[in-house]
Length: 153
Image (cartoon, helix red, strand yellow):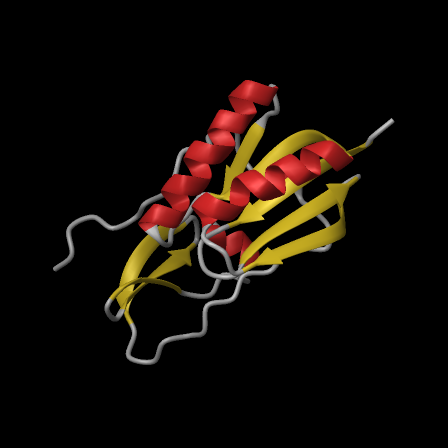
């Protein structure tokens, strides 16, 4: 019998990170420098062979428009095809609420529960981490992407 796990996907920047969680605790990490569109199906198929996947979680933005779009389409498709619930949270959950690159010198920041863009002269290094323990309360069944950039003035 296969071990039951949850999968967490962070695909906003390179490297892509996938966490395998058993009883909300991180038991394995997969890191890849490959493109999301190339590696997500391979990783997912490998994990389907090894585990009973109970839930899917991902960072739904803000960040790279294409990375978010690819992750959402892939994970939503797998959710429907394999009947696995999909959950999402914003990327700030995975980077200790540090600014996330938008465009040029604009960065996304989260103040209270609102995501805005601000101009920063010094760019923080992008960093996303898989938490040691998954907090289900931070995720929502509203898994649509947060693309984030409206009118830029």
